[in-house]
Length: 265
Image (cartoon, rainbow, N blue to C red; front, side):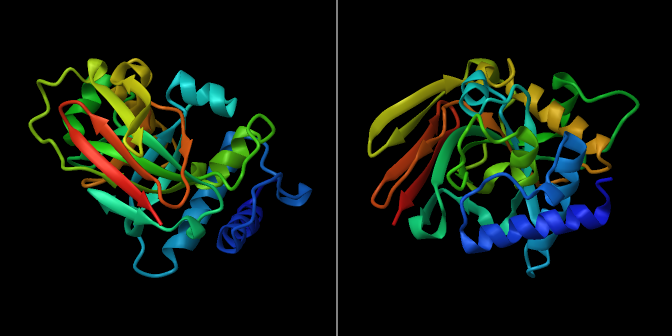
């Protein structure tokens, strides 16, 4: 049985691996996670360990693997979620030290700011209903550390248990007058050192980014959790993850929303 004590032990192992900057691999047999329920139980405990460090709160969520380009890259055919901590949310442009990560990656995303709490309702949230909970749209970069994962050999539950590899985000200025924006046809791109390395559009994210947001709201509600007012949500990368090295400058540009950037030292 995968009880709370085992979830705690597994989370402590992952937490120690993060602190020691160890490459990710299969968990020991006595800590292995076999399904999504077990994976999210571990993720919850891992998030609690980080929050116990003091002054650190959950500031939002990422929805991973919402585009075909990312699902093909990782070898997983369904979305998953991970938490974003308050001290890892950067505004405008972030300066990151490559030495602080095992394998520093970035993704180009459309993000939202949540207007008010999103509790469970009489029926699941939909693309239309979740829009009422959106205060603003933002251009965004997800910061990931896959700890040198060998994709295709690591099962989805391990990725999820490991907080879906999230190590923060960078968001641009919020666009609050967004209702006239055609979000599905919104185009965006990733630039590294001034060169475009990937492009995509809103429809690449489950047909419409708010489909990913509704999926997240329903998933959290199913687990007894919810989105809260002020949360930042990254809805999935429109460009396959790229890996950065010292000296690199990276940016996400989303037409009509603006820009966010990263400088690596």
